[in-house]
Image (cartoon, rainbow, N blue to C red; front, top):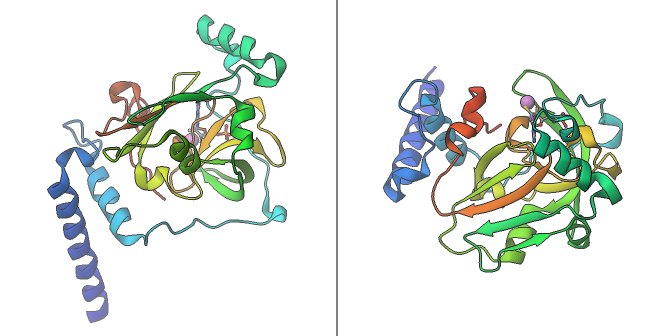
Length: 250
Ligand SMILES: Nc1nc2c(c(=O)[nH]1)N[C@H]1C(S)=C(S)[C@@H](COP(=O)(O)O)O[C@H]1N2
Ligand SMILES: [Mo]
C-alpha cells in the first residue's frame, strides 16, 4: 500500500513538474481544450506521456508471421470522392504510378520544396512491422516501408524555432504532431506496405505512420507538411471534427 502511494505521488509530482515545465516555456505548447470538457484530458495525458516515456523509446515491432489482415477504413479511394475536384485530381495523379504526385514541405524550414515519390524512395528507408490501433477499437499488424520523417525534415532544414509539424491529405484530412513524435525514429512517410507499393485503400502513394499515436494520426494520401513554430491542430477542420483528442499517444 505504501509503495503504491509513493509511486502514485511520484507520478503526480512528475506530472505537475512536466506541466509546469511545459507551461513555463509557453502556454501555446499545450493542446487546446476548446473551452469545454472535450479536450480537458489532453493536457494531462500529453504531459504524462512526455514525462513518463523515456526519450525516443521505440514501440514494439513484430515479425513477418505476426502480420494480420488489415481493414481499410475512412477514405479508401479519393477517386470516388463526392468532392469532384478531389476525385479528378486523384484520378489524374493515379496514372503512371503516381509519378506526378508531389509532397510539399514548407513552413519554418530553410529550403521549402516538393518531393516526388521517386525522390522519397531515393532517401534512406526504414521498414517496420507494427500494430495499428484505431480509436474505434480494432487493431491490425502490418509492415510499412518509407522514409523517416526526420530525414525529410533534415533535407529541408527545420529552423530552430520549429515545434510542430502539421500535415494534410488530398481528401482534406488535417492534423499535427509535435517534434517529439515527428523526429521519432519510427515516424515514417510510408510508400510501401507488406512488401508492395502502398495500395490505394491504405493511402497510395504516401501515408504517414506515427506509431506512437492512435491510427487516426497516420493520415493517408499525404501531400503536404508544414513545419510550425506554434501549436496548430487545424482548428475545426482538424481531428476535433470527429470529436477526437489532438493527443492520441499510446
Ligand atoms: N486521409 C485519410 N487518412 C486517414 C483516414 C482517412 O479517412 N483519410 N482515416 C484514419 C483512421 S481513423 C485510421 S484507423 C487509419 C486507417 O488506415 P487503413 O485504412 O490503412 O486501415 O487511417 C487514418 N488516416
Ligand atoms: Mo481510426
